Amino acid sequence: VTEVTITIMLLANTALLIRGVIDLDSTSLGFNPDDLVAVRFDPVQHVGRAATPPPDADTLVDRIAAVHGVESVAATRTPLPLSAINAVGETYFTTLGLRLLQGREFSRTDRHASVVIVPNAFARRQFPGGAAVGKAIHVGDEKTARQIIGVVSDVMIGAVRRELNPCVYVPYTTTPPERQAALALLVRRAAGANVAGDIRRAVLFINPLQTITSIQVVKDMLAVGAEEVRV
Image (tube, rainbow, N blue to C red; front, top):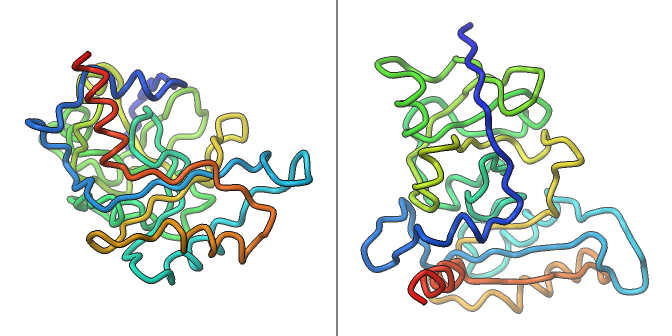
């Protein structure tokens, strides 16, 4: 198996990755931001408790997938692929709207496996003229190599940064605890559907003490970044 060491810088401030590279009027993002909603949770912010276990991702995904007007939902630690290492769930690429170009997407059997999915630009740069699937790469300072199981279409958010630092996707369950952000969900709703209230009710049904820190329309998030650039 071919192994390639890829050094990936972890950037804490994702706002920096948006600034300077988004122009919603002229740049193709590589996905359709319309009707995408990001739902964020903080396992520490609970009513009446200092800290409780984080919400169970499978329960949340199944419950919110049943909400009227929701077409797809994925657990993730990075709602948008703004980080060098994006920790995502099995239905993330379908929900975001990326195309699978080689191999396969993540499955539940990958939750404790050393696997990785890479974008097309990464595959072309690192493995010119050959298939990336089946190759092994070292992600950052991880001692165990991860096998590439799939290649997906590119996302143009942070395109300038990606020329300097590769972007990869790993199962959200395999990132070390010290690098785990709070659980989030990426939701694709039917066109124009108002799902925020039903999502909140679905979460409260699972755990009345669970706090949702934000529900944001992805296009609005990107528009804010674009306005910051124009200032």
